[in-house]
Length: 141
Image 1 (cartoon, rainbow, N blue to C red):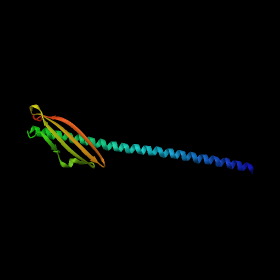
Image 2: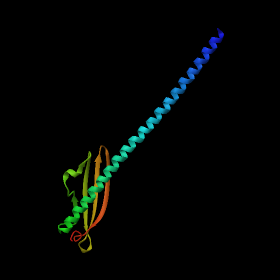
Image 3: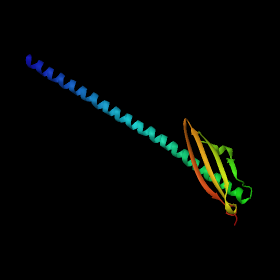
Image 4: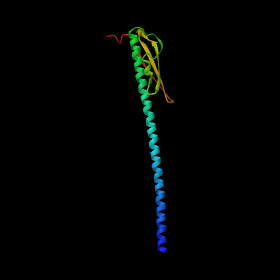
C-alpha cells in the first residue's frame, strides 16, 4: 500500500506543476495579445491622422488653384480669404476642416499665398500650412 501512495503523491505533484506552467503560459499569451491590440489601436490612429493630413493637403492645393484662377481673372487682392470651394468639401470622413488663405502682393503683380488648413476629428486636431506664388498670367495660354 505504501508503494501506491508514493505514486499518487508523485502524480499529484506533477499535475500541480503542470497547472502552474499552464497558468504562466496563459498569462504570457494574454500579455502578448494585449500588446498586439495596443499596436493595432496605434496603427488605426496613425492611419486616421495620415488620411486627415492628405485631405488637408488636397484642400490647400485646391485653394491655391482658386487663388490662381482669381489672379488670372484680375480679381485677386491682398488680404485674408476663407475657403473658396464647395462647402461640403469641408466635412469629410467625420472630420471638420477650416481653410484660410493669406494673400500678400509682390512685385510685378504676383502674389504670395499662404494657405492654412485646420481640422478636428473626435478629440484630435491638426494643422497643415503651405505657401505658393500666384501669377496673373500663369493661367493664360
